[in-house]
Length: 139
Length: 231
Image (cartoon, rainbow over all chains, first blue to last red; front, top):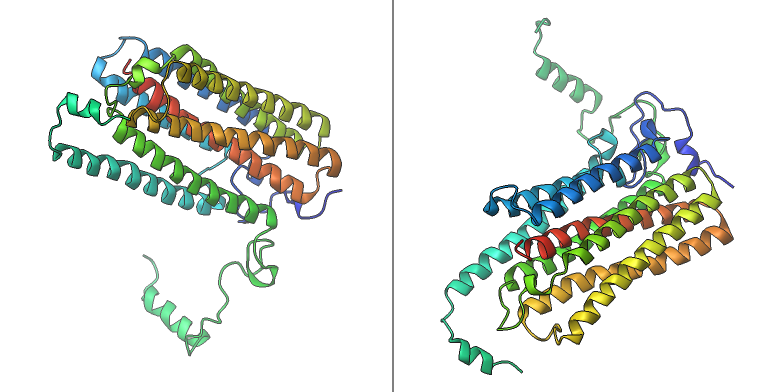
């Protein structure tokens, strides 16, 4: 049922072979480690998620630092997902995937922080509106 | 440097000799064409790589779409218009269950793809079914959350905060629902057609989609539920 195209993973790795690999697929030198990767990804994710939920509900660390800690944990967990589940690595066979990701992250950054920046300025320059008048505007 | 010549100019002279009119016909890269790397006569990369890469581009654009909803939520977060704020409508226990369920489904999804790489129909189907079941539980819990809120009169049209809240969480729920439909069709296709190349390619895409949904959920539970709840 298999064709040569799907079999490229079962070929012995060639020295200097520089074929890309698709995101979500395993690089040739790494194939056969699917389940190990899944287990490591799950273990790290559980650890980071549990840490986030525990931190959010407690005062173990300095209160105003909690959002920063949550952001760090979230970014770390996204990294864990990218590496262990999506197999985005720093290998030369992955350059295209990483570049596309970098561009995506840049666009996301521009949209989110640009919106927050602009809308904060807009809201600072708005005329203050009394609460009573605001209630009247509701449907 | 040990050689006495000027390496840059030597290189330039060699280039001019080999390609006097700068037509770029000089060979480059490995002398042997690398199969599937787009060199020489071998053509573009194999379909497995192209399909996965194309879907990766789509996923990134989908994440850009989500980022717009995140931006709207960040802007509208305090626009409660006298209505309930996020911290009043969040139930952390329910969110913890949702998170656990979605993370586990990502894990079983990966196990199913490991099984399909080992060409094991039985295990692939079992793990895909487990993934689908966990996804379904996630959707039901989320739907129940929305129903409870709606029963209290907390609906998207109440305030800007709630519009952006329901928009963001609902968009993610919609993606999970679409993913569930896709999962069912994939199970049927594996059963009927087996692991043909195009089915494997679709499985790669489905895996990417499901893991990306989990990545988006990390953002949702961190920014909307944990930070928004102001705990």
